[in-house]
Structures are given as C-alpha cells and as structure tokens.
Length: 181
Image (cartoon, rainbow, N blue to C red; front, side, top):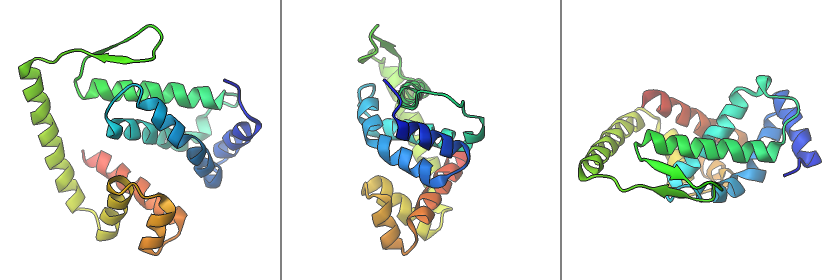
C-alpha cells in the first residue's frame, strides 16, 4: 500500500490542526474502513465505533503524529487493532487466522452468554441515563447520525447549523457519553 500525494498532504495539514484536511481524510477513508472492519466483526456498531475512535485519536493526538507514515496502511492497521480490542472488551474470545482475513469466534458457555447479556443490559441502562442528560439538539443529531445513518450535511440542514458545527456537536456528544459510560 503506497501513500498518495493527497494523503501525505492531508496528513501534514492535520498535524498542523487543519480541520478541513481531517474531514477530507475521514470522508476519503470512512466507508472503505467500515468495509474492512466488517471482515473482523458482524456487528456494525463495533466496526463504526472502532473507526470513529481511530479518527478521534488522530485528531486528539495530531501534534504528536509521525511525520512520515503510510497513511492508508496506518488507518487499516489501527482500525483492525481497534476492532479486535473492542471484541475483547465485550468479553468475546476469538482467534485470528494466520493471514488475518477472518476472525473465528469460539462458542460461549451458557453462563458466559447470560453474563454478556446482563452486561449489555447494564450498559444500555447507563447509556439511556446518559442520553437523558443531553439536550434535544444533541439527541436529535445522534439519532439522525446513528439510527437514520444520515450524512453530516443532511443533519446540519435539518438542525439548521453548519456542517462543521454538526460534526463538532456529534463528536462532543460521543466524547461526553464515553466519559459517562
């Protein structure tokens, strides 16, 4: 996988704090990374979370990013790592084949399944409580983005805000929810 000139330029601009370059990198890779992540999990929510975490970390730690990096390889490798880490966090055991093309999930015992369901219900309860603390605008933005799968442009239009404000609103909502959970 080789760097394209545009990827290198975007990376350099992101390191300088250019939000437009960050958005462009996200737009360029989000869909292909989702397809890639879905090779490692059947759960779309885990795949999307992993990808969002990749981009959040890039933006959060942009000043410390390496100067020369193969952007495409980096994004794919970090996405793969995040998906696998999220699987581990949900207490599912898995093993990778040697070529990393597939993830084989081992059978969970009945007790493990019950514990997993209880953990899932507890997390849903905490999420519901945390969601109640958000404003109507924040809840609507998250609903349109994750339940309706609407693009930022459409959400911004519905809410009557700029696209950048929409992205920031959703980013901050997710950040706050993660802190609360």
